[in-house]
Length: 182
Image (cartoon, rainbow, N blue to C red; front, side, top):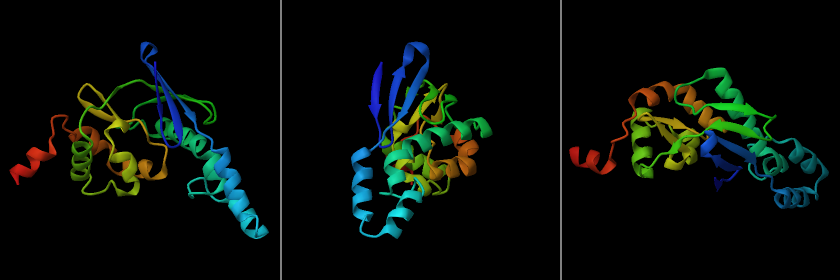
């Protein structure tokens, strides 16, 4: 069992069971700070409470972003079954997600990022944070799969390019070798 801590979630790997468990991170101090900073204007305070969980520093961002990402990840998997997605088997309203376990991609970040940029024709920018880090991917039978697809930007990229990425990704790709070829 290993535990990884991300920006919005904690991930517990249970390799012997073939699953990972994703738990949302809730930032109580941050939400209190956000409320205190908006308390000077009642109108701003009210709007802060209703801003999207994707708006950085809103109360909902601090409290519900991890829950939102869990829930959207599960629903997106169920809806699309895209071959680029690591399957998310279950979600309890975003409070806990159960996802299929996979071996973390051991490629270098630069190799993953550059290859994804080539395959998508520079289309990974709506969520560069997710796509630039190899730890957000697993390899299964020499095919890459994304494990962190709860954000709107990640889902947008998967919708547009997921099939191509799944089909064209080369696990032997090296950015250094690619530069020498040019």
